[in-house]
Structure formats: structure tokens, C-alpha cells
Length: 282
Image 1 (cartoon, rainbow, N blue to C red):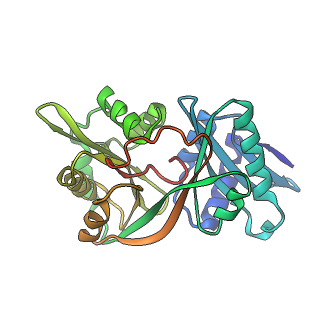
Image 2: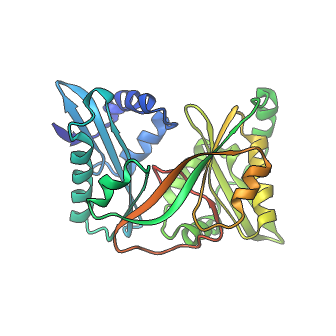
Image 3: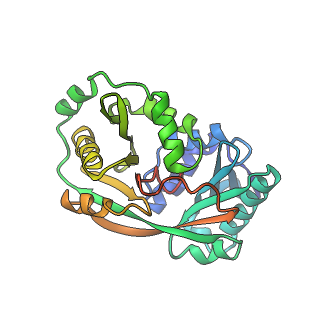
């Protein structure tokens, strides 16, 4: 049985997420359900949650599909494709012109059969290090961290290509110590946000006008993050992020394929976007 995903499903959804080894938290599931209460779906068998998929729509023009998860004991039964088809039908009925997702190489053929085309490639990079001492992290977190001002939200709209202000404000409120802004004479030159995931701290989105600005933001994030594992999902189209990550000890982990269905949608400014928010959010 397929039905709407609800808040009462979050513990079971976390079980599926943990089985897959992903980094999301209960708060991330809350964000999906709050943003799209009729666009997140669950598959149930004998009263047990066995699959999920989520959608989130940005500004009415772009929708992101994510969290396509199936219980390992029920893979190969078509559960994931049924949930995907329901998500696509939901977005089509809402009139959303562009759907996007970040696929693994193994998942690409499934999405291609449903009309998704490849847009570009992204990569997950991982840093493994000694965790930051909690006392140091506490002192940094007590600094005065600004609420996301309008020019940050505007720059993200330009860089990403759609308005996701509500989501970014939620992330900033949850981890204000990971909100980083770089200004020169009052002008915004770059920004970065981060999340404390279930297994790693995650940098993204991360955008900057120049390599040195991007490097400063990255270094500050690594000082403020506390975990021994840090994720960065390198954005496609940026020529200098790879070198910045390599210089700080990051290693590539897995490729991701950005795909779209419908109109390709606004391209954003790929040259200034260093890292995406994450495969589940775009």
C-alpha cells in the first residue's frame, strides 16, 4: 500500500535511512513533510514501512525528488519505482515545470526510463580527521552569528536558480554556528551553511565569487564543525573546488548524476556554487 508519509513514520524512515548508511536526521524528515505534506510518500506492507520518497518544491518552478529508500528485504519488488511514479504524478498534477534529482550511477537507468535527462555530474567528498574538542566548538558557537540577511537569500536564488529561502532559514536556525558570510566593504562575496547529520557534519550550500573567498569559508567551516567526518557535495560547473578540497585532505567518495525532467529550468550560476545543499535537497 502506498500512502502519504507522515510524522509518525519518521522513526521507521530513519531505520531505512540508517540501513542505507545515509546522513539525514529526524529534523530533515520533518523539513520534507512540513514543506510538502501531500508530496512525500510511504510504502507499507503488513503494517510495516518498507519504502519512502520525498518531494520539495522551490518557488513553484522547481521540485526536488529525494529519499528514495526501500527496505533491503523488499528490493526488487518495484516498491521504489511505484513511489517514484507517484511522486512524479503528484508534481505533474501540481503543474511544476521542472523536476530534478541527484542519482547514483546504479539508479540512473531507472530515472532515465521515466524521462529524466542528465544535466551534469556532482561528487561527494569526505574528510576524515580527529574531532574538534567540544569546549572549543562551544566557544565558537557562542559568537554572534547573524540571521540570514536578504542578500544571502538573493545570492542563493541566483546561484541555485530557484527560491529555497524557507529551507535555508530552517537550516540556519538549527545550526547558527555553521552560518558563514564573507563580506568586503559591506558587499557579500560568499556564504556557506552546514548541518550536523547523523554521522557527519555536512557543508552546503557553499557559494563564493572567487577561489580565495571560497577557501576562507571552507577553512572557517572546518574550524566550527565538530565531527570527525565532514561531507561536501561538490557542485558541477565550478572549476576550482576540487583543488580546495584536495588541499585540505578531502577525498572523493562517490559520483552523483544530476538529472531533470520537463523543462531544464533556470541554470543558476554554476561557476559560483561550490557545493550543493545535498542530494536530497539540491
